[in-house]
Image 1 (cartoon, rainbow, N blue to C red):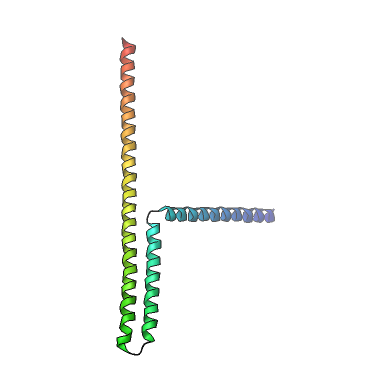
Image 2 (cartoon, rainbow, N blue to C red):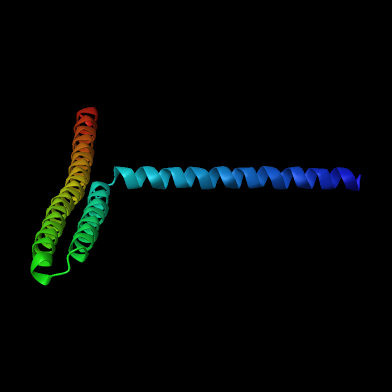
Length: 141
């Protein structure tokens, strides 16, 4: 009997762990879907890419400038590489700013939809109440 109880307890623990794992996996999947659907997700990707590209440009610039022994020969590499990296970062910043505005607009649209839905509900309730009063008045005559 005690062996059956232990086996039943193990089975129950295993079932609970599987349910917990499934709920964790489901929660993770839902969080991932929310992240990807968030209007700021492309901005995060753009930010990561621009930082990587700008960093790569600066590394290449440093390597090229390091190959030159004279300062006057290093300056063109440093100036062009630095300006290119700054340009990439500015383009990324503008993209992030635009996508931030997109997110803000999406929130405003969502809020506007909620207000319109509430106004429609109130209107329906008022019209239903008026119709009920009219039918009550007609029924009492």
